[in-house]
Image (cartoon, rainbow, N blue to C red):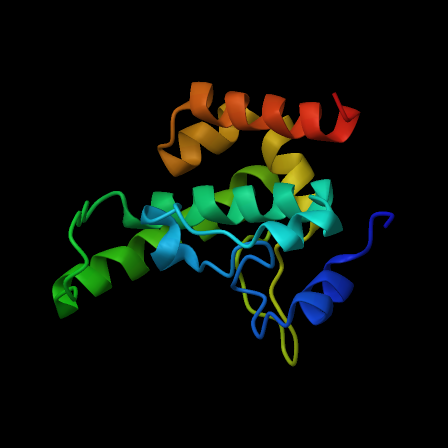
Length: 154
């Protein structure tokens, strides 16, 4: 089978939500337990565009949660939720002011502003992205290199 688009992969694998990985069915909450996978779904390939967008979103969501640093899976208090929300708004505002990017903002009737162009610019300007998110520029660079390797089909 040749490479197919993300929507086709989700439909073909029966994945109900785009917040789930179409390969393993995991959501961001399940990423602590990566020992399960459905190898038959590997035949659809790894789409570089979608991988880049998902990595970009994962970095953003990690950055939102940095101030609270909650390790266990117990529920957050209202104070902790407010801290996360304030951090999210601060990061979104800084990206808009410093780079002109609208990140992780819901769009009416569909998805959000996280698209291929936004994720590409995020990884191109990793020093600025690191400064805004508080995530190591070395980590962002390593993820960028991995994406380039996937893209080059090495």
